[in-house]
Image (cartoon, one colour):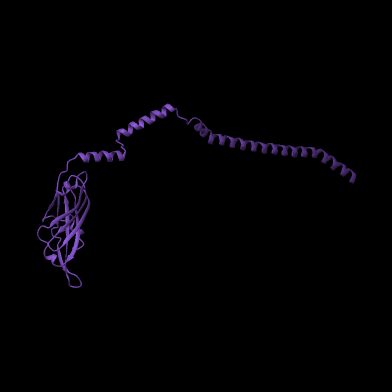
Length: 228
């Protein structure tokens, strides 16, 4: 009985095993083929992505050179445009302006005086009498005053002032404080001793002869007076 059962089982195993073995082998082959296909697809996709990203860049590099003739035409057009919008060398413009100023005759005067309403009389902490006032220079010139150095000579005191870079038709003010008898003797016209007078493109004599004392001259900006 046992021998028959063993033979039956052996026959069953032999009849089934080839099918199972074949099925297993087929599955392994199919899986291997499927895996190879997947890697090929990935590689293909990477190549396509690379071509898509860099193909245009390569073409741009290869075709970016401009013909020399076109570059020359662009340079000419740019030069014409610069002339139309009046792009001028700043140095050349300055020289041209200097030439114009040299040929322009000087017009106007220089007025100087104690600024109206600026005089203040007071005592310091020691009880000494002091005074303060402003001196205004008003230009009605058509040119810039570069430098005016002068002294106002009163009977008991001399005051020195320097005015620099006063533009045409502008005013400038200087402030001073002093003490003593001069504070009661500032009325009248002082003698004016001019050390230097420079108007652009003019002689010192031409500058000096235009200086006029003005007893009614007003401060250009009273709020700047430190003694008020």
